Amino acid sequence: LLLGVGGVTLLGAGLGGLFLAHRALEPARLAWTNQQRFIADASHELRTPLTLLRADAEVLLRSRKKLEAEDAMLLEDIVAEANHMANLANNMLTLARLDSNAAHREHEVLNLADVAQAGIRRVQALAEQRKVSIQTEIAARPQVIGDQTLLGQAILALLDNAIKYNRPRGKVSISTTEEQDQALLKVSDTGIGITADHLPHLGERFYRVDKARSREAGGTGLGLSIARSIVTAHGGTLTLTSVPGEGTTVAITLPLARRIAIGNKQALPEH
Ligand code: ADP
Image (tube, rainbow, N blue to C red; front, side, top):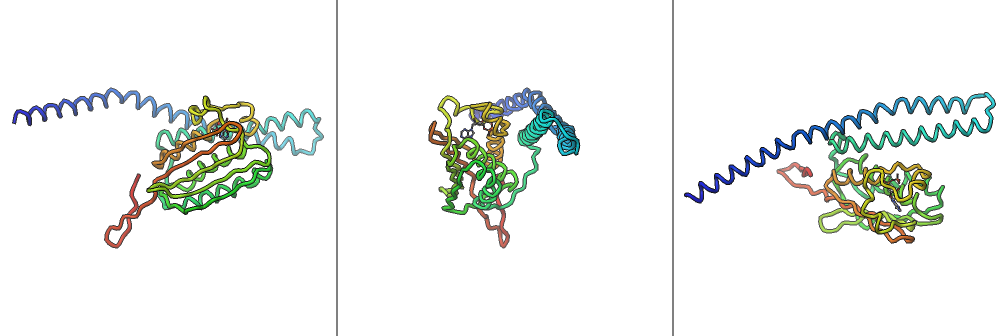
């Protein structure tokens, strides 16, 4: 009995401690939420003036007035910079929404091979432009539960990097398999690779190995962070392995969709 009472007291103290810890963390949580909301609002607000700026510069570029070559170049720079900032604002908005769990997420059954193939179609033009070929290895067609748009965006970011940081006439391969209870998607390239000192930092926001190359390729330094946040929000993992000068592989795992039969109906587990 004594032991029992002691146990209850300890349990009480433990719960009390948890309650106090929760209370102590409340201001930090509130500050974090406010910061995320501010970033989301700010990036959202930036999109309209950027669109107007780009539109004005494009009107001038296409106008019948004969422009000096130098003026036309300046206007083209304005359009390129406005595009870059619009990408940045969109990426920051996506990240802030993912961080604060405000991103709208569908929970539908998806075939990962289909999402991968849709991603390939979207990067086909860029691959042709950079003379990079894409190979597909669909060893399995794993079913996962998630948001098609978000998972598509994550896969697109990986394909985009595999092309951008490749060499001319290089290769990108994308594969889907099933391993135990996991769906596995891999994107490999024959590109410049990443040295061991940079590898742990990739996926940190705005971390770029070569800032000039990233900017020139239209990168914002947020693609991998977004991909990782999306995959993590789906209960999965994202890992990078690389051999400098030979290439990089990014592997995504996601839990397989398992159908639980309840009576005649089928329910899908939340994750
Ligand atoms: P970015 O918009 O600069 O491409 P990411 O967040 O997608 O930003 O990637 C961060 C950095 O990681 C890139 O700037 C690049 O230096 C490096 N990186 C990403 N993917 C690859 C890859 N497949 N091969 C070599 N370097 C890569």
